[in-house]
Image 1: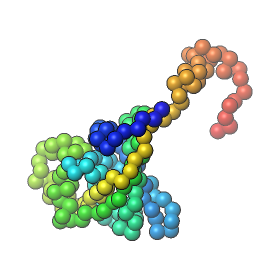
Image 2: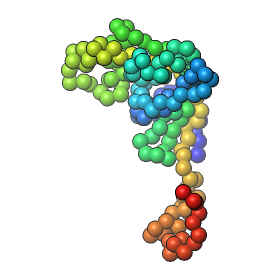
Image 3: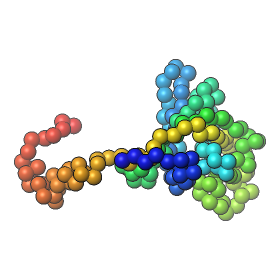
Image 4: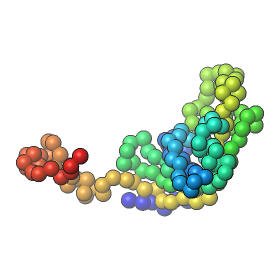
Length: 172
C-alpha cells in the first residue's frame, strides 16, 4: 500500500523514524549504501552525523546527489524514499549543527559542554540534505490478504500439518 504525502506530512513521518539507509554515488559510478541514524533539522533539512574519513563523506564531496530510505522500527513497516542534495559541514562550523542533530535525534544531552568537547575531539562532521523529491510512503511485506494465507501454512496455522508433508518450497 502506498500513500502520497505533501512535504509537511513527509517530514512528520520522517521525524518519528531514525533508522535510515543513505545512498551516495561512488566515483566509479556504483552506489554506496550506508545504514545511518538520521534526524530532521529545524530548517527541514535531513541531518546525519558522521566522520570526515567515511566513504559516504568522500562520495558526497564529489557528487552531492543522494537518496535516503527512511525505515520504520519493524521490518515490513512503512518506509519512504527521499531524494536530495547533500553537503558536508566540517568543524568548527559543524558544532552548532551537531547539537541541533543530537536534539532532533535523541533529545536533550545531560551535559552539552561534554558533548561539544567530544564532537570537537572526534572531529565529527554533519551531512545536511536539502530534500528535492520523495516517493509515496509505502508499507512493505505481503499484502494483508496474502499474509493471512501465508500464515495459515506456518507452524500452528490451519494447514501446518499438510505443510510438514509437502516438498520443500526453497532450497536454502
